[in-house]
Length: 321
Ligand SMILES: Nc1ncnc2c1ncn2[C@@H]1O[C@H](COP(=O)(O)OP(=O)(O)OP(=O)(O)O)[C@@H](O)[C@H]1O
Ligand SMILES: [Mg+2]
Image (cartoon, rainbow, N blue to C red):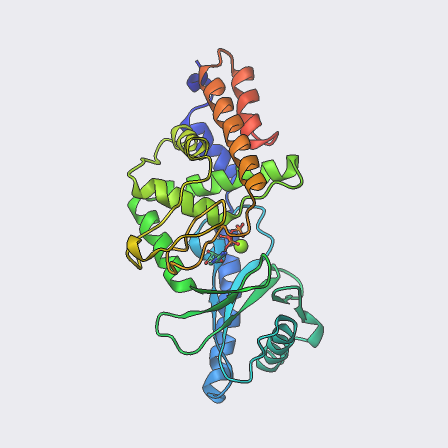
């Protein structure tokens, strides 16, 4: 049967070869972000009143869930002070202007405002660093108003608390939590390639996996863990409210009107999936049903060729064993 042809170990090898960002690359990109952060810190030492207070690696590179296809380095930048504009366009210009001041060895055209962030481009090697503004007024847990990369709205949240949240799940299921997250993100990326309007935000994927992790699901067998994830989406129809109690009591969470309700583990008022329509949720459920069926078929297939055929329905043509 199919397990003889493609088993957990084959998925592990596929992940190493095709899915995961290689460790030397991840180290290089983290070092790139660290150099920027340290340069800001030394500028702050000389100019304590400067309004950019801190730069912090965020996103998948910080969480260890980055894919090989990573194309920028996410860094949050805390901006304090009464003169920081709240209009998004003005805020990005302001951030760019301040970054140019703190990094005088970058030419002005290496620091460019985009729609909802400012990119800092390095000459030669490395990736662009995508600096996301966070309006900050001194909260000790680093809560602030993060500019949403989806629609430019301000989201009250805390990046360090998100990192701690994910670290807990990664510790509960060492290696496996992060690996299954990368495999699911790779599946979602493959779906996006097949259907242009398919959307499934990485942060939502991680929150759903965190929910399954908290319920005691064992992630150590990847075909099984993936099957559980897809079954959960199908069974819940993406309409089950997901709430975590790391930072607040479940009773503190109010009601929401949006079809998908995955509540920010660090802010009970923030629905992380608020922009998802019923049609987009249904498309995710349909894709999960297909993926679940394909894994069932792969696990039951009599030949290697058929087994690989079904796994390719999940991961696309780059899946080979
Ligand atoms: N709606 C949101 N509410 C609160 N925080 C968010 C929200 N969306 C993103 N974030 C923050 O931004 C970080 C990056 O989220 P994103 O969905 O881009 O995932 P990622 O881990 O960087 O994945 P990718 O590899 O796809 O870039 C999250 O870890 C979280 O801290
Ligand atoms: Mg990212």
